[in-house]
Image 1 (cartoon, rainbow, N blue to C red):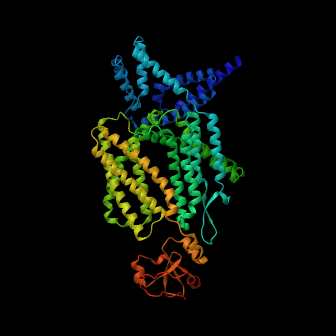
Image 2 (cartoon, rainbow, N blue to C red):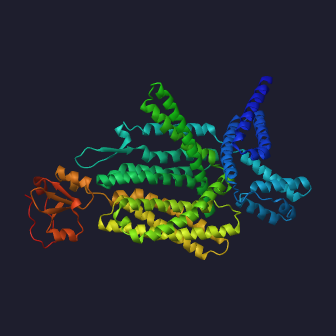
Image 3 (spheres, rainbow, N blue to C red):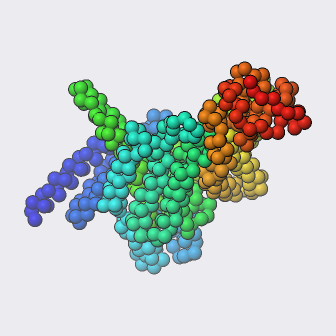
Length: 627
């Protein structure tokens, strides 16, 4: 017994010393003002958990303390460095609580307002102080016990390490196995025609996100004691979508279209995986505020996951480098275990640390200083974005045809569009609830201004994509980009409409409703991309297999229209429905929008074996044979 007490004292002293060293990450003025109190709170909490023997809770507390310290230390250092004070700090509720100590209805409303403003701790402190000063007040006593009971209930939530670690390790092993690029069975291959299949990308790009979502949902269901039927339905969405893409991608037809589909699917499957996790939290809380709060926690998961992954990759890279300096080379399998397996573990660990599966999104714990810093950065970018867009639009007339002729310009436009939509979302949902009215007015004007300019550029980019599609052909990439452009343009137009209709403080609610609609539409379009492309761009395998091998290679390598010509003949033929259709003359060729880059050369013998179809035009007469 005495030995156990002495061990606890040693652990307590060691952890307290380590924590006091970590406090040096804060600015000196901050340490002088708060350091002693923070160290005392940490020491008291560790002493209590050691005394109660709650090792799992202690481990969680230590991880959470380190994470919170890292975030707040960065914020305080930035504030100290730039003499910056983020608006919307904690407000005092003491006078208001005292004034409403006999009014239960108004006190309840004050509490709800504090929750929305992220000031729950300040409200609780005011209740505690008021109860101490007036212990005979039944209303304050009731609130005191209500809040402390809720705090005790919240403390019951701990990270279920016996579930997190095995699920994370299982996902890590899955990532390690599926990243083996030397195993052809674990590679997605483009195929078709007599040419041998070619490896394109590892299967992990199709299966990684869906299986990660499955393991995360299993953990949340177990830790949150939720209905397994909801988990089954939610997990099935990305899993079935990935299976669909895996078994039907070769129906996309020609090899370039298969490659495009295999590029688009890994981009859209993580969105569906995120949606499946969202269903778990939003199935009974579908309002706009819960949707956006879930999005807010998702940002935190991405940040925390990025920190964990970056730290692990740095550790793994340094470890491999140290051994490499001694001429000890890590095997491919070990490197995949370190990097692929580590990533698989991290993407399960990060959500388990951030999300509380017992609570809906609006009641999740939020580190408001962390979000205020991000909000300040995003809001600072709004006027710069407005200025850049304004200058850019002024340059469009002088370079009007650039996106109509250059594919790379269109890609940049689409990346820009998503970045600005993300900026608008971040500046909105990260906005402090108690932001000053004058600041809100300018924020609203900037959001509307950036939206209008972005809408102009988006319509310009959409016109360029449609122009290139009409003058060339529809491809999976273009279909995807057109869809995303139309959706984003619709959201921007809806945002302006909601702002035009908004009165007073309703403008923020209008933004919430707009982005809430956007999350649903994004999910639907992501699913549609995966489902419809194999059927829209498929080819008739039976017709193609009847063609000579040389022509099959052309069909699977080139998008339609497939134009064929042999070396010893001046005639050009359009391959259509397994038949060759003679194009009468160069005027007809040009009138139909064909270009010489689309013409493929094959042997006259192979071309002559293809059955004749209706000439172009139909009254051109008997088609000549290639010679």
